[in-house]
Image (cartoon, rainbow, N blue to C red; front, side, top):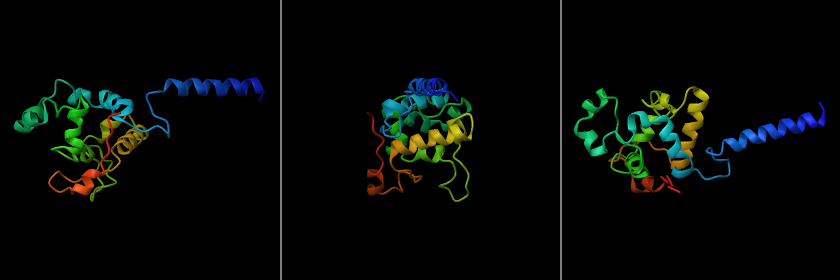
Length: 156
């Protein structure tokens, strides 16, 4: 290969990488603002957007909302945190888990929504795990204060 062709190839890869600025690099801390918000908007908003119910409203009529294909709101950091480390702690982890952390090996009911194929789902799950800092499938009543403190989920 000629040097100009190699340099053109490198420049092309660099241009593609620059265009992927919404995905953090290995050295960038994953935050809600730089990564998770866009991921939720792209992969979850159809059922968990601003027209979805708050968690308290969802709990009042779960079956009714499920028939409308609506889950609890995840359109803001505060709404998402209810399922990360709030009143419904662990809900997001249980639903997005790939099955590697369950006794039966079954993925959570929303794992398939993380991407169009296995590679995209695995990459997006890794982003969620990096953001949270601790991946715990326990329910709010079962999680210890020490385990709760391990959940990072930074906003910025």
